[in-house]
Length: 358
Image 1 (cartoon, rainbow, N blue to C red):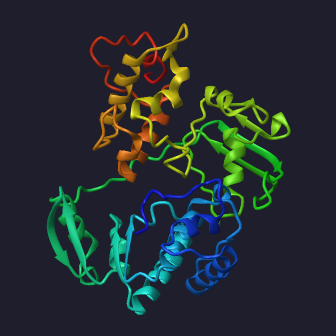
Image 2: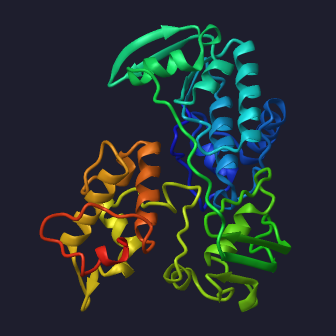
Image 3: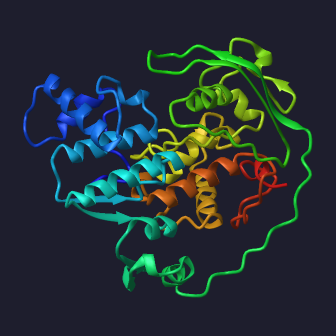
């Protein structure tokens, strides 16, 4: 089974992680040959000698899949495998699964993305609230009929909202150049872009072509060499760290939900404290635990995060609900982004509510 949240040691290499998951012992040099053979056969190329913490999320999934394929499975279970993949990586995954099926391996594919079920699967079972609500051949069904089985009612009609005229530039990157911090990284050369208020900017590319390094530079994880390389809200901040940029209004949602977006073993309230501590949760060196829990509960309600209370560990949430929690917490830390319902006894004139209501 390839789980939605990977089980890899980031400080070990690809080959070392794979050998730990194999039932039989094997020499590392022999394993490296087999990893390369399986990778070339199924389109899962990955360097066996790379440290896992240098890999993108898509590359880490390849490690998990290769570890399964080396055991020659008769049944492969995949839980929401494309939730962390680019479209190109998803296409490669589908080609690999079709080849496995042609070789006689059964695949149990768990997903809420109906277009993938329709394109890939020979049969589908629909679950809602822990009960089977339907079985069908997805190749013969429409996306609408399968969606109705999932939600138990007709689909709501969507309407396009009025377009927003972009305002002033809120993020500017000017001739950003950085050197890769590890031998497998990608250096940036003269990257420039500008994002205005009310605008959505997309950055496209196959994994491993500098996206990770660009986001690290913008978020402050790897400061630039000049202050003017990056500006947030007209403030030059290229050499400022991540905390300083957060105070300027930047919120960053990493691709890795567990490990970077949230700490798996900590409660949701403790994760909130880690990401929003600067918003008034610590006063005179003391943590305002009551305010932290009330704020976390409000985020869970506002973003309909299911299956978790403020004391539940982050790893207990499903991938989608954990993502909603991470996004909600980051947005709540941006002043004026949206309003929460104020719990009884909490004043709007005091932190943390002052920073998230407008």
